[in-house]
Length: 355
Image (cartoon, rainbow, N blue to C red):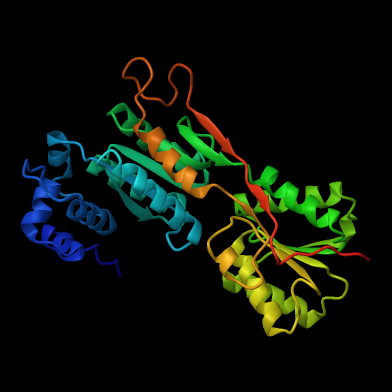
């Protein structure tokens, strides 16, 4: 039996989802010259993108280009993306623009569908954030969509690792994690468990490699470093650490996690299992989210300048093009590539081992 087709999304549906009148939704999506408050315009555009409303978007695009900046992210529920989005909005408001946000789950298919819908809405810029954007994904269809968008006057900025020809900001996860491994080794931790996240997630895999390099450079024996894969979440860290405790920690002296949420889960599991931190085992993370200083003991971590990255993404997206009006992608001089390093922050969750 064939599957029923997706119901047609109407302007009434978009208005209801956005919590505005049909007239307001029509002004936003129909290219009316009447002014709509940025707050309502943002809600309408976000609802249209979420519902995949495309009717009459081409007519609107011919009339005017939105003053929005569209952020496309893998997951909107993480503390790190919350810091980035807040900084983007602050920076956008300085030039009377605003940020709309869409989530893709990190799959190339959803990334493509979301970008295609947003391009029809004609934001002045797209900021894409993911652990990895690849030019060859989906046979190059996502890249083709983005190149066409820039040819029509848009701007693309990527926050994450990418081989696409657009301006980008990348965190050197491996280089940022290396000092953490070296610090644990230098403070006497010789047997270490790394809560590494899933093997196929690029940024946490790079952090794991950096932790290992730092530990080995500090004299830790490779056979005394154990890598445990887990879900990238507080629950993932809690479950992985609970299993370690149930197995018996043995001579493990430190647990270092691929991000702070995993580390917070590890701290909770230690507390539930009666394992003292840091006197019995040190715990460390990566990112330096707000929760890192709210937990007890305060978390040793690697601080990333997430707010600065968010603001810089907007500055790149709105920066005047150099030279002629050609897109910034594969043109003369090539795209801007910025690389960011994290900073080791030592707090109460780690200690020095004397034996």
